[in-house]
Image 1: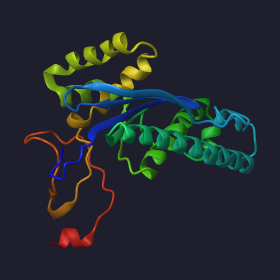
Image 2: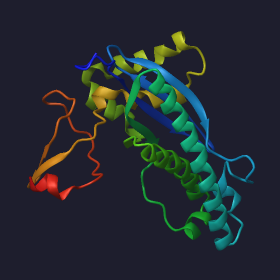
Image 3: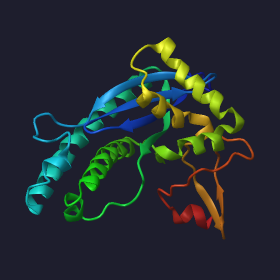
Image 4: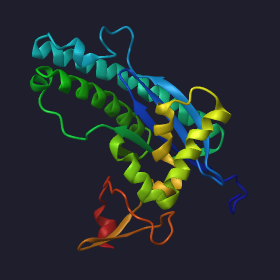
Length: 246
């Protein structure tokens, strides 16, 4: 309970592992004890649009302008589906008194994609573009809902786990794998990998106010972390001149 007698919201974080047209998400909370408080598959491809599950494959043989229009239509429809799915999840968590403090989306190589013409000339780039297409859809839906997003390359998960959990990294992975025995299916590699990066406290998914910038140092407002906690990533969202000047 807070000072006004209201029930404090429990913190949670969402992890996503996306595929072509759908994705697996897991909601984790460590409010007292690490636990899975939500999981589901979300559909982000509109079935009434031809080729919506693999939009870049579908437009491979189309003219460039026609391909751009089709991808834009797919994107608009997928935006709506992702926003609805995440909005429904947030409402459910809110009813259960969970506040989402951040999210993590598993990514591939992280390299920037070339022009559409170059993508459509390479089958490998078509696959890469489709993966990025659906990750971007979910990324935007989260940010539109006010949820901070961190992108983590899947091949770096092992390293990140060691950085965050230290010598307890293997123990944490075993614990996450073991949730499947209690929860039942689905608890596949998708759910296990989505759960690994989104424990709220160790990853420090927090929004902070930048009070002052002094050369290569930032002076920030309050944050829920202990002294010595490593900073994995910094994403600048809004730079308010008044707060820095102060």
